[in-house]
Length: 66
Ligand SMILES: [Cu+2]
Image 1 (cartoon, protein in one colour):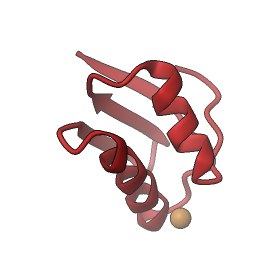
Image 2: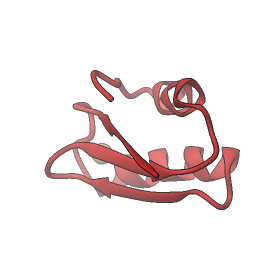
Image 3: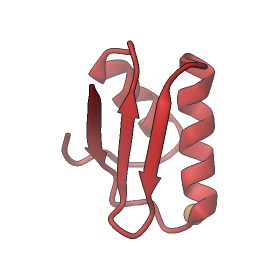
Image 4: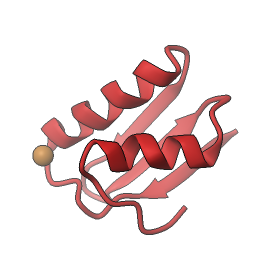
């Protein structure tokens, strides 16, 4: 099941790459889709929502909604 996180601080493909990398570090099998225009991170993974949110925040980004 894919969960979606609103990350309003995503500005470009570089941001998306950083976030994708952080999530892959925690779960190499995660399916991550990032819509830079909508600033939404979609992830299908065994990780808890808290872990996902923390990983995103640790890259310097903000999560406003999930
Ligand atoms: Cu960027």
